[in-house]
Length: 517
View 1: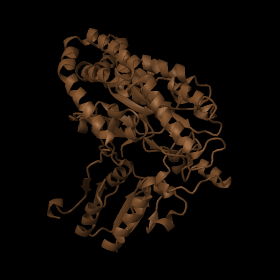
View 2: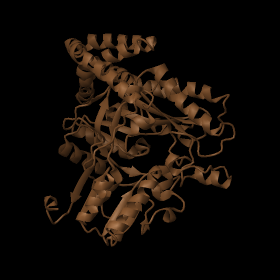
View 3: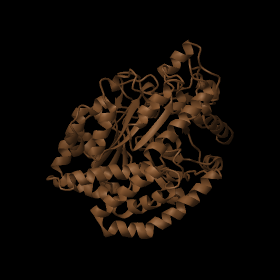
View 4: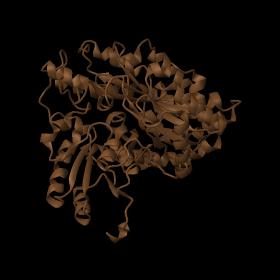
């Protein structure tokens, strides 16, 4: 799965941040059952069939998102042909498709918590405590045509405190999948439980940063503040990357967010005229600016094609979104995805279009009849939003560098050593990597976007004043390398080059040595 390039930085050419993410749900299931288990992440058809032929599996579980239902159907066919005695279990968001039982040849379809279901199915204790697997949040990261170095501890660990979201926005698939509005499933209810898991990940993976895969992490303030007290007690200078709504963030002072180590926030902006509870009373532009002033990177998310949007007003709303100047910006079409309240509404109103399920993901065209915007126009507005953000605000990596520098300047002399340590750790990239990256970026953008190129030049000057010779060395030696690599990457992208993750196979609880297979 490549999230950033697919739906955040996809119009940024060679500057797009690219990386893959593991299938965290099946890794959680694997870790929390006692049966011998194999996880195949990103398998090829040949590798999948070879694995089935080599081992007699009692159960074959297949997890998928909705757009990959065709792959699920083919995998079921392969299982029936190659391993006919295996029981096939389907899970993940693909299970939310109405009538999925008729689309794929499976024995069981699991909606919701797969860990509890699989434990029940195997006769194990479904209520047993959740043991968290060691998961690195991303791998094979690359930008400007070069893979980024991945030393141990350099990439954040993924922690999954809970699933679902009580905000219950009508378009939200994760909220709907785990019970809908007002409901969620906590794996770790207290800050102490979370601290224990994070400490284990820190020791095993050597990490100091954590991607909290929780739809609204800061909403649970008691848990977050208990975590903060334990971090203070043990002098942990951890960095947290979180999803949170504007109303959840508003519960905290900036001092509390900084002390908690919040370094990056994914926040829904949606629309200035939206009526979602999570945005009630929020001045999102003011909040975005304040977060950046404290070195907190922000990924804003805006919906294109809400019910009130028309060709006459949508450009103004997109201007409003881009004016937030967030470090990253996701634009998504208003999309009734199977299983959500919005899908049910559109179904009742007979406004759903007969669209291939593989195209229902919010990054192509409408899958419903909008009252004012055509299906083809929806794609034009979506693509235009990404281009506008890139042209107006520049590459996301430039913005990240700028925000990180703001945090460093503000907190480099903070009286709390724990806070200084975190910002010092984040500033290392400013010294040795970003100066060379910005040097190349400025030269590539100068012919097409003079204003952004000048902003980048000014940022480089500030970096040189702060970090001196390290920045000059980065510009002199790394900069030209990145310039050549970025130009080469631009040519490759123009020719339609794509990237695929490598296949990964992991086994647990096997009684035989996998090398004997």
